[in-house]
Image 1 (tube, rainbow, N blue to C red):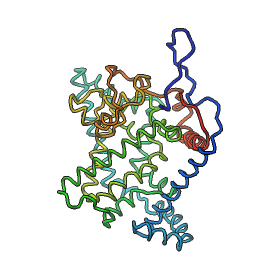
Image 2: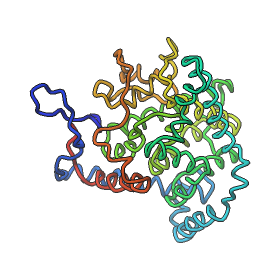
Image 3: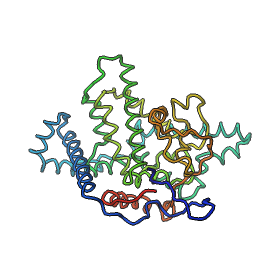
Image 4: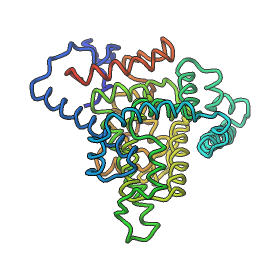
Amino acid sequence: MNAYRPTLSPSPDMSQIQTESPLAPPDVPPTVWEMVSRAIVLMLVVAAGFYILGAMASMNLNPVIVTAFLVNELPSLLKYQIYSIIKAFQEYDLLTMLGSLAFLMIIGSAVSLIVLEVIIYAVQCRSLSKAWKRTSLYRIIFGEQSERTDLYLYLYYCFSLDRFVIAALGILGPFFIYGLLVNGGSLNLAVNLPHFVQFLLYILLADFLAYWFHRIAHTTTALWELHKFHHSATSMNFITAHRNHPLEVAMQLPLRAIPIIALGPSVEEYLLYTALHHFVILLQHSNFNFSFGWLDHVFVSPRFHLVHHSSKPVHFDQNYGVVFSFWDDIFRSRYKGDDFDPEYGVTDNYFNNKGFVSDINVPFAKFGKALISKRKIS
């Protein structure tokens, strides 16, 4: 199943793709089993949310201790959540943030990609003026609504505004991740292995989970309604990597904590992986459209990922890898064709028309509706 596969028109030559969304067919009432299973999933999600909140408040990962804490301190816990939201606003300091390592890492990666783009395009075009017009920065400055949306989301994460969404949702946030690192809240499952092997296992586990979240985001209707926002970009530039719906990003944070809890990397290792991961995903979205040769079977190259962003039916359901591409070989989702000329966007692209606020709000409604209704996916 692919949530953005278009249906073909009934014309004799079958050459036209309908602009109607594949989610357009009338809702089909869910069966009793589907309603029960969805209720169970929602209960598990809520339970996980309470566990995470309890772990944050009690500074303990033991489920028994966290459960006892929740039972005894639920009123206080709700107050703590409200306090966390207020604290997020009170502690936000723009000047401090501008000097933070996270901000410098995001800006540094962007600047390095701009320089790399100019060099590569200058060699290809043999003209700085032509090279400049092919860069991401040029498209961001002189682009249309799609590029402006990329810029708004880039600034949103660049200035750490996502902390307010995370605090409001009451789920696992960056500060808890750092708390785990600093306080040693880890199972240390690989403690007897060499340190380098532990770090390698941490990277592999983190990317393995990222692969499956990404794949599930494409193959389940509800999550696709959020992830579609990322694929609605009609052109690619390096900050398209940050074009992610805030709710989808918040939902991924607990997943990112699992490798930390299991393997316990140091703060330095976590920052190193985060920096490398950030640079890699920027490069993937930079519209370079080149491969790494045989290394394409190890790492995700720009060409590998640009195919994933293509709206051509031949490219659907493939190339889900985030950093390592061999997951797509193992789980048989690698594109093996020879068409590497992608067309960007999604079927029935209702984004980029009514402004940024509308583009952010619509996925919320569609996500909620998809959770409680059964729809046919072409």
